[in-house]
Image 1 (cartoon, rainbow, N blue to C red):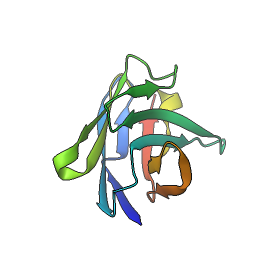
Image 2 (image 1 turned 90 degrees about the horizontal axis):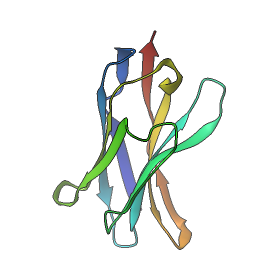
Image 3 (image 1 turned 90 degrees about the vertical axis):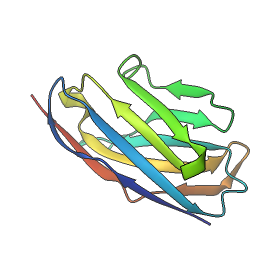
Image 4 (image 1 turned 135 degrees about the vertical axis):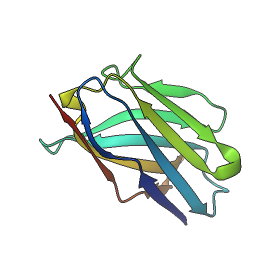
Length: 118
C-alpha cells in the first residue's frame, strides 16, 4: 500500500503562485502514474494534472499553460507548480497514486487546501 502526504497549500492572492508537493512512501512497485485532483467548493471533483512513469503529462484545459506537474523519482515526490492562480482554482487538492490498468492500486492523500483571494 502507498501512503501519500501533500503539502504546500495555503492562501494566495489572485495572480500568485504556489507549489504543492506529494511525498509517497510504501510499496510503489505497481504504481505507474500519479496525479493531482481537486474538489471545488461546489463539491465537484476535477482532474488537474497527471504524470506517468514515462513522464507523459496530461492537464485539464482550465489549467493548461498555468500549472506544471513534475516528479522526482529519487524522492518519490510529485509536484504541482501553480502560477497565475485564479479564484476558481480555490479547492482542496488531492494527490493520487495509481496503476493505469488496475484501479485496485489507487491511493489518495489527505488533501491540502488552496484558497485564492480575488
